Length: 162
Ligand code: NI
Image 1 (cartoon, rainbow, N blue to C red):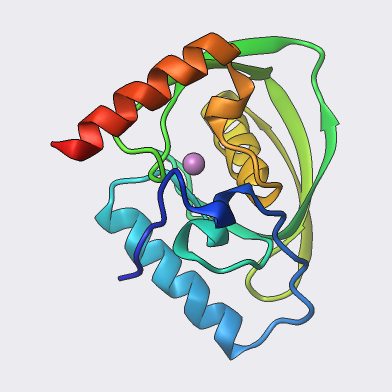
Image 2: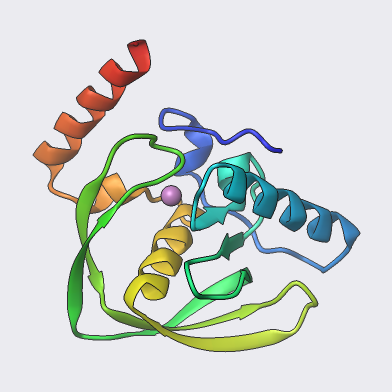
């Protein structure tokens, strides 16, 4: 199992880099990411969260298959937006309502190196937008009201002291 980095780690603010090719090392990383995500009861995890700076994230929401997104690109977003309460394994015990497009069209490569595109809505759309943000150095807390963000970060720091 891999260690998940948390708020305050500077890597969470960095842009991840493109995966240049598909090899055993990438496959091994992805396997470890799934183990780590399941152990922590997450529904999405990006490579940066385990300290790897490649543009990879994985998802597995209820009633859906495990999904791997390598070098993902957002192709289209719906005009319709939705509010949904988000959390993050890198910001344990903190949740906040975040507004995002309700549906998205995505393109990425899977673990076998094959390109695919995906239309997602509801929770899957939510999770993949959250995970793509991680690859661009953005946390869900960066998408909420600034005052509320500061309050939640203070709360988070107090929780960490306990
Ligand atoms: Ni997250």
